Image 1 (cartoon, helix red, strand yellow):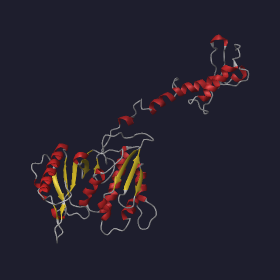
Image 2 (tube, one colour; image 1 turned 60 degrees about the horizontal axis):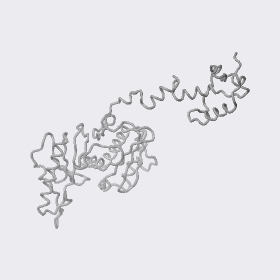
Image 3 (cartoon, one colour; image 1 turned 135 degrees about the vertical axis):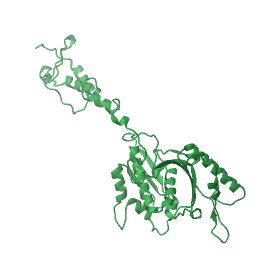
Image 4 (cartoon, helix red, strand yellow; image 1 turned 90 degrees about the vertical axis):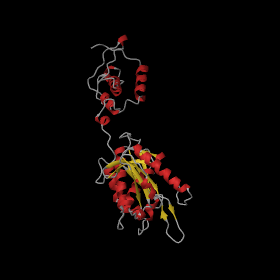
Length: 345
């Protein structure tokens, strides 16, 4: 073989320092056996492989193997690290980038009353989790006949003196969300965190199911489902128009825009008083399938828990917006004529 001129010690030391300081070279590489580099120009002729310890004055520096490892880590050689690196950044367009985003509740549930989520990305990646904070409506705390902390214990799943919160654990297990409940009294908040928008949607659905079970009143259920989403906070977004109090829900198999207002009340001396708003149902014309519904004992739709309210809903955003404008205008004219009913619209 050719006789190699011994390299300057300074050159080897510099290369060794450079490689040790490089973040791309780790201690886990396996040096290839019997590997040689071609004789370089200028008479250096370094043979670096398994024979380098014998040919280079006993230095034992397997520089060629280190450089090969460094090249592969940078994707300069056609090793497996290059396509793996591309896939990790999504440059090769895996199936996840084409995955169709589905509506809230498309995978969960026997109940159809699920919120439709906005076009937020399905996954934000590790360390950039989405959050949703639900605030329990105050009226839910005042259900007659319920013991102290009953709602808090119901949400946790602590029943009959049990010590384990099986409900929250089940939600976390099924959705991969993290559930946190704060405040045993009003305001009670439920924080839902996940890297996946779909997982948060599933978690919200299961929380809703638990609360609907707790109040056990079909008519009050509509008020509950509206209030939860109308006051929701966090980086997870719902489709809603805050200026008009409108939000999009899927309920009983129908996706529609909802707007809900509490009806004003006027007390009378010596009597219980009454809720005003029956005249709202006579507003005409309403476009498309938009309708105005009054809920309360005095309107033929008894409520066991929630205060009387009016619900305006329809499948077309514009139709509901027009009806909300007409209802607000009618109520303000009614209250402007000297009626003392409250709250003011």
